Length: 332
Image (tube, rainbow, N blue to C red; front, side):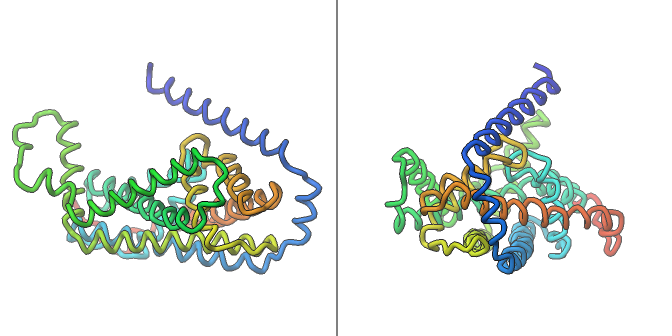
């Protein structure tokens, strides 16, 4: 199968999933109730999640900077990483799942280091640490709100994910996983295949970061804070819909929503994310319409307002943003 045909099949599958999800959600909603909720929205609360999202951009940029510092002596300014972060959210709108913007960030950071390994590893690890922190938050949610779970299969999936997250965190902190692979031998001289050499290069970059315990701990802590910020944001969306959501319940349902949203089944998780909001917020007693409105508010801020800001910055500054300082040449 050719690459173009494979891409076409993936796009077709994602489009079918999107259409199926949209039709299902459309049929499950009472639009008269949605209209009543629209009229009664307390829009003053929306300022809080917008500001928190902007703060999360800088938080993500800072943990990205920590990982890059562990991998290289060259320092990229925090504001430059924040720019890449918010522009990545703009490109995320057009790509699968909630992680499509990572592709742009890898491309953008490559110009500084001239090393695919550094750019790939730094972006990859910010995502991995985020998932591990999300698993830790989910474990807390399972402990204090497990009675909300309606399907036993979801309980076991959530429990398995949480246990794997804690196991991986423990290994990262104590065992320095990749250091065990590469610290005692240099076997690259015997390898001739360029693709295997690139893979080894990626492992070496991973090793350079993983042996830096301070960087690992700092990134994990910031990732945990980021997950808590995401929960606070959903709480404020509830207030916008005139609903006070239980914070301890959100510790359970928000990680599950984010986990579903990360699946690359539709473009920018359209339909998938909204369906997850409707289903899991239903555990908290919200109607389909209330859950959908919370989902739409989330989409408005994280899927429209913040990406539009990123798109504007990209259009206005992309020719000038890197002229304020010299980009190093041939840094590996």
